Image 1 (cartoon, rainbow, N blue to C red):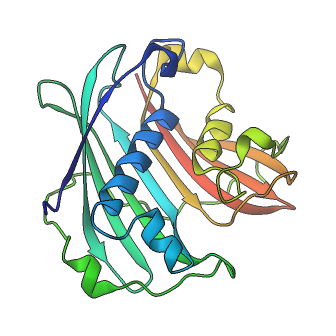
Image 2: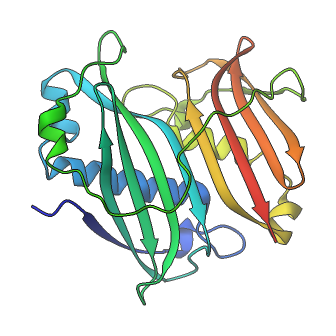
Length: 242
């Protein structure tokens, strides 16, 4: 079986933002769809993990977009595993337009956890390594994001029904949506996010009171955080460009 997965999407109108472009969270959905299906067809998908009472969780994600897809565009998403460790696996993505030109890349880190204890479990390195690929991914790996909580205004938010996923926890895409909502609409009119990076640190649960934080670290660069009782459950960073 091919090491690199290939998935096709068409950008539907109802999935676009007010500018008629695909959003960062929607791209995140594409990535998770591709990762899940790539894993499933190779024997380590949701059902396979569930039989072992384990589940994949997204730990870190970095997305870089050169051009955002627009209405009714046909796009192709490639995904592959570039590193396997005892507790984490690294997965890459490339987003291409209909002509085959690259319009974005992403890097992600995943961990397997025990569904009861929610603690990391050891990965089957030998089985996963069969699918390792040396296909290049030209963007930086997700890195450490400096804390912004305590240095910025705390915007209150409480986790609701529409926020939770099949595991009963705050959906990984919802973290992105709530953080991006901290930016003024005018900024989206004037500029684009060229890189968005997020690090998930703990799981949010229904009804949990949160605070959302945003701070500009330098021109067009922001650090963000979602906190519960003063402790970050995720941190993120966004870089904007004209």
